[in-house]
Length: 492
Image (tube, rainbow, N blue to C red; front, side, top):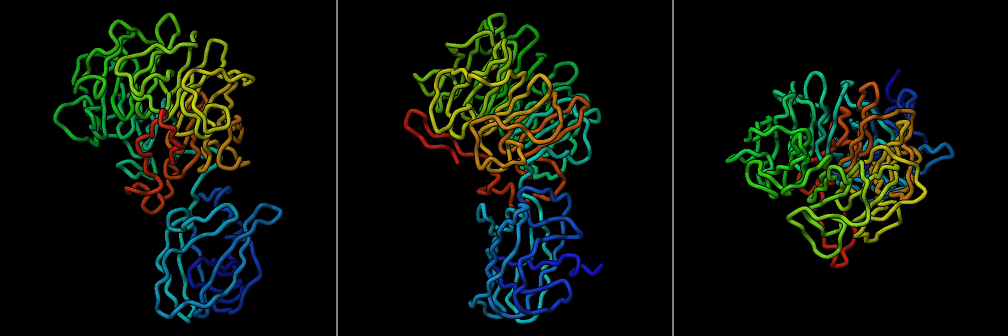
């Protein structure tokens, strides 16, 4: 089948492009609005429908006039094209800043939907090969390679432990569209994501770290970074690790806490005195732990958003007891907030509720724990950047909060945020859940690994958007948070 006939489209942007139809490479005039298809697959709905492989579109123009492209959705929710020709194109002029206009927003093509060579205004018909990629996956998709994982953790980069070793992907330092193996990681049993580094435990409980050594978070002296795992300089053995942008901490078999980086020294040192912890959680610039026996929560680090659970100060350099909630069995920390599950599966949250991630419309400050009443009992929770997800006892996943890149995993697309829990689409049941900057991932009871959200963080194998990991790009991590006490607005 001739490709022009198969496409039956005319793709125009703010570039100088005009009519084509299914019968000729050089037909002039303005075509009727059409649905963008390739061999029967809908391509133009790049927001909601998956594009599993790059698609090459042939685009023709037959005169030298400028074009403006607008899209409208029909009753089936598909995007249709309409074209209005305008003056303003000079032959030979290179047209930059092409954009894809939808009813939802205005998105640059090169950043959001793929890559294309520059379009030059030329009265003669020209062909534009355009790789059309999907920007956000609003339902879970399998990670490339069909990885079978036992553990997963991520923020900008995500790493998963498999029987063949540990694999990572993302946009911080590696710009990996598909999972790549971590050298020498075959013995790792658990992995923990910081901001720009990861740490893992081997079968003996020894800690290994890789990535940036900012603040000494790798636990190795006199190096700035390492792309391969390096052994943390200690004889200590751990059963759990926690990491953020400031430090890494490990819990030994008796619950004692040792930290390196901002909370300790360049190598692991005792932190928290006689406190014993049964679970740790870390995010952005704070950490929390559940005390052995009491189920009480202690937190430390930055408190600019009230994420430590008390309003009196902006930082705590030693663990501080959180008042108002005990009997905690599950703990999660996010970029601006913290949440905990008590013995009854009820959810308590505190911090900066910018996007509804604390289960109520925001923005609002919640510097002390608040019970979320009327929610179904949860067995596991995970907090990302402005959104939260939880598992029920039957493995269903529910998410709430920020959703501009599909972080909530809902095909129904609840605008850009939801303070109410939204069920992740599909029939998958997860045993393990992790959340990151703009994505979430889960491991099913069969070990299958799925992710959803911003394509740059999902390991789908599709090429990353142009400049996805470059400084100042849309995929960059958020800047340091503003102060809760100064009446800050929501982070971008």
